[in-house]
Amino acid sequence: MNKNYFKILRAGINTTFQDQGRKNLYHIGIPFSGAMDNRNYLLANQLVGNKLESPVLEFAYQGPLLEYIGEKINIAVTGDVNFSIKKNNGLIRGNCYETFTLENGDVLDILSTNKSVYGYLAISAKFDIKYQWSSCSTNTKANIGANGGRKLEINQKINLLKVNQNLNSKKINYINTRLINIRVIKGTNFDYFSKEGKKIFFEEEFTISKLSDRMGMRLEGPKIKNIVDTNIKSEGLIKGVIQVPADGNPIIMLSDHGTIGGYPKIGVVISADYDKLVQITPGSKIKFEEVELSSAETLFKLYELETQNLISQI
Amino acid sequence: MIKNILNLGDAALYCDFGKDVNKDTNTKVIRYFKSIKNKNIDGINNLTPSYNKLIISYDLKKTNFKEIKKKIENLNIDNLDNLKNQKIEVPICTDHIFSLDIKRLETKLKLDRDKIYENFFNKEFFCYMTGFIAGMPFLGDLDKNMRVKRLETPRVKVPKGSVGLTEQFANIYTFESPGGWNIIGNTPLNIFESSKEIEPNLINPGDTVVFKNITKDQHQNYNE
Image (tube, rainbow over all chains, first blue to last red; front, side, top):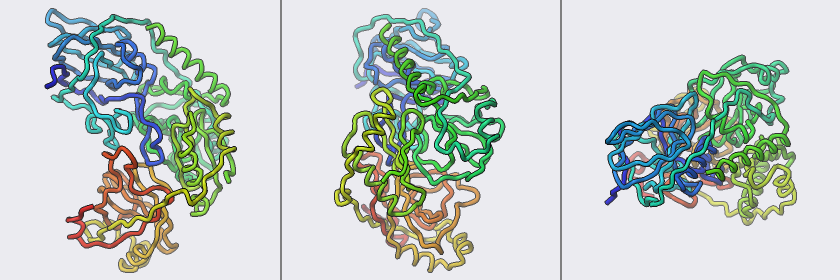
C-alpha cells in the first residue's frame, strides 16, 4: 500500500530519474550518466532538505504534469523553468530556487525550461525506485537505472516511500548565467587537423544541432579538415570530449556517451564549463576558447567554491 | 611500459602504450588496468582500457593530473599470473535467419561460406576490450584473409546476440543497437546481464573466446 504518489498526466519530453551517476563501469561500456547540470541538481536537493546525492527528476524543454496524492510534501524546482501549482483554491505561479508545499490533489505543471535545456524537481520524500550499480540514473539508450531504464510515460504512477515531516520553507536568489565561449583544452589528436581547421575551431562560431541529446551535442558550422586520418584506433572517451568525424562537424560527448570512440579528439570542454554547456539550446551559437590545464583546474576550484557557497546559503 | 602520459581535458589521464594494435601491447594495457583497479586508488573514478590506450578518469574535487600521473608512474604492476583470465565458449547459430551478411562476406572475401565458418570456428579469440555499448567484447584477431570493412550503411537495429566481423575483430551485440558490423550468426547466450550487481559482463579484457556452432533448435531451446 502506497499512500503517497504522483500520477503522470503528461510525461514531458525526456523526463528521467537522475542522481550523481555511476562510477567505475567505463571498462564494461557503462557511462557515468547522472544529472546533466550538476549544480542545479545539488541545489534542488538542498532546498528540500535532502541528502545532496538523492535522486531527482530531470526534464528537458517541457517538463511533466503531475498530480499529487498523499500527505504534505515540499518540492523545489531548479534551472530556468516556468511552472505552476494548481490547488483547490486557485493557481500558484512557481518560482525556481524556492520551496512550495504540495497537498493531496494538487497538480504540478512544469511547463517549460526558459532558453535552457534541463531542469530539476526535488521532493522532500523518497522516490520508490530501483538502484543499479549504486545509482538510480536512467540511461534510456542502454535501459539501465530507475523506471526500467526508460523515461517517464503518461499514466504511470511514481510511488513515494519515506516522507520528510520537516517542511521548512527555503529560498535562495540565483540566476543561471549563460556561456557563449566554451573553454576547452586541446585534445590528444589536435594535430590531426589542418592549420586552417585549428584556426576555425578556435575562431569561428558553431551552431548546436537539433540532433543533440544526453549522449552528445552535435555542432554545425564551418568544416574542420583532417589532414592525418579521419579514424583513430578506438579508445576511451570521457564527457566533454569533442570528436570530429570525417564530415568535419564536431560532436561533444555528454553524460550518456558511448564509452569508446574512434574519431580524432580535437579538444575537451573543461569541467568548470560543463553545467553551462549542456544548458545551451539547439540553434544557439557557441565559440570555443583555449585554456591551459592549470587554468582549467583553477576555474574548476572557483566553480566548485561558488556551488558550495550557494548550498551553504540554503 | 607506458610510452606517454598526457592529460585528456582536466579530469582524465591518457596513457599511450604504442601505436600497434596487437595482443602484446593490449596485454600490457590490461595488466595496468587490472592492477590499478585492484589498488582502488583514491580519486580515480573510471578506467577505460582499449587496444593500445588506457584512459584514467579522476574526480577533480579530490585530486588532479599531476598527482594521478605521479601515482601511475610509481605503480607496481601485478604479475600476469594474477590476472585471472578465463576461457569462454560462446555457442552461435549460423542459420540464414541470423547470418545477415554472409553473402556480402562471400563476395568481399572471395571465400565460400563453409570456408568462412571453418576459419571462424577454428580461431581462438582474445578479448582486447569491452565497451562502446554495455558489455560488448572486441575479439581478435581474424586471419588476414577474413578482414572486411564495416557496412557502407550501418543497420538501424542489429538484433541482440548478433556476432559481427569488421577488420581484424569479431564482436557480439549485447543488446539491440544500431551498428555496421558484418553479421554472421547469433548467440543465445546472455553476454551482458544488467540485473547482476557484480560482473554483469560475461567476457572481460584478457579473456579467451572460442565459438561453437549450434543448430537452430539448440539456439531456440538454449538454457544457460
